Amino acid sequence: MKGKLLRAEGDLANIIPIHLDASFFFERAVRSLDRNHVDKALKYFRKAVEYEPENPVNHCNMAGILSEKGDYEASNAILANVLDVVDPSMTECYFYMANNYANMDRFEEAEQALVTYLEEDTQGQFMTEAEEMMELLYYELDRPAKLNRIKSRKGVVEHDHARELLEEGKFAQAAELLEGMPPDYPDYLAVRNNLALAYYYMGQFPKARETIAEVLEQEPGNLHALCNLAIFHQNENRTDQVLLLIKKLRVIVPFQQEQVYKLATTMGILGQHDTAYVHFRRLLKAEETAADPALAHYAAVAAFNTGRYDAAERLWHHVSKLDPGSEVSPFYLSRLKAVQQDELQPENLSYHYHLPFDEQFKQWENYGNGIPEEMKNDPLIRSSFFWALRHGDRATKLQVIHALGMIGDYEVQQALQSFIQESDEQQDLVEAAQSVLNELLATEQHSERSRAVLPLSTVAARSIQNASISAEGSQTESISHWQAVVDRALQMTETKAELQQEMERIWTDYVSRAHPEMTAMKHIEGWAAGLEYLAAKIHRRPVTYQSVAERYGISASTVSKYAKQINKVCSTVPPTV
Image (cartoon, rainbow, N blue to C red; front, side, top):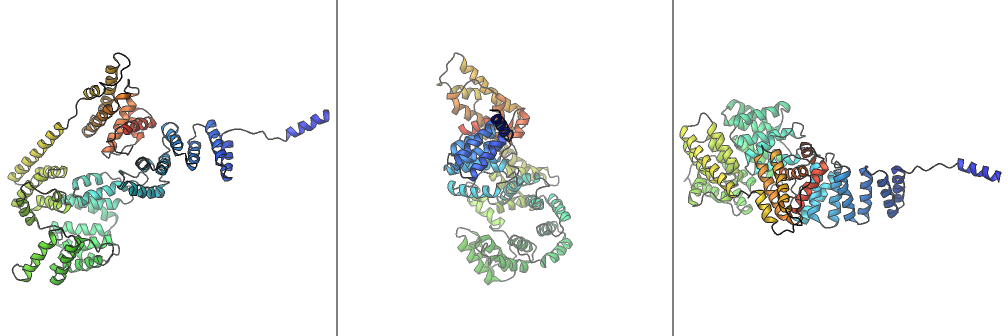
């Protein structure tokens, strides 16, 4: 017996004790996955979570296996718990959730999760995959996603949006966006070039020139900046400076189409029509740009200005085929015919794909209801308005002031306000601009009053009149608490009127829709923070769960929780939470 006992003790001495912890079960799970034992791996990951519930990686691994098994709902429930409770900074969970939703053919929710990933994730680990999924969702939903920014690619979306605003003729809005772009943005020189153009289109030449000088100080050979500077000098009659830049630009032969286009249009504006014609012809031979009617028109203008009338005629006929509904090519073809028949003296044409300014006014006078909507939104027409307001003669400025009054949007108000503040303008022009501006502001205020919503307490009371109230007096208590939410949000944003109006609208909508579940409110700060977050998103303000949470003294996961709850009920709120 004694010998057997010694042998037993010897055997025990060689046994290595097992230390059961999260790492142990994690390693077992990985080993099971290597052997394709998925169910066993899931069990081990569950045990790892039990031992280390605060570790988000184990939760995500468990969610990943559930997704592999096709249990997408359960996978997303775990991922949502990670974001709401375990670690709100694990923004890659949104990408995993987007994949799960896409696999369930729930493309709206997939888009919402993917947009949130792109807007909140700082590392961009899944950028390539996210872009591929964005293309899939575009195909399935038949529309682009409402993406405000890509956080891991700082400033890219904002810069693209600013370029779109420039193309739409919304120069003041583009300038505001570009002015806020950070200096560490990778393509910052392009930002400054576009900002200079925005100033130029608004007629603010000194600011445009200063901005271009900043670009050339950092990169003296920047082609876009050199072209812009040459045009700015020409408008200020600095002939010597223009000639120096023309000499430099004439010898440049760029290969990138964007740069060829920039150089061609610049040389045309500078009166170097032969050089412009050569570059425009190069672009028309390229497959990507051959079908652009505006480009064909520019080549026709260059041909006309150099006496190549046969080429100009062919090109304008080509424009008619590319853009059959346009009035531009028939107008210039008739002018060309008059020149060829000696009925009209040849004068250089400007490089704009629209009718000449005087001709536009003649047409608008024939419209009984003012400027047609498509003309109001034409960026070239809008830029010609702002240009003429700054640099036209007295009669033209009066015409433009009247025309701007018929457009009456934010850009117009900014332009008129700036015009009024100019000290060297004639008094009657200033008074005319002030009169138009006052009318626009009065109309806007009247429109806002007509859209004003009822006080929240009134709407809430009407909404819950038919709801089941279990205890006497609970209805009044509930309304009071729901009113406290919007009151708190308004208090935190008291200097932001636009945001406040949006929060009142969202909250009124939410209360009216959610009335069957109305109870006395808990966590007023969380509801108010979620409400502010959504309103800021709608108005494209830079905001994160964390930034709002810090202001309200709560956690980011709490802001996320209540924002999502409001967004789930209010179908009018864009899916960008």
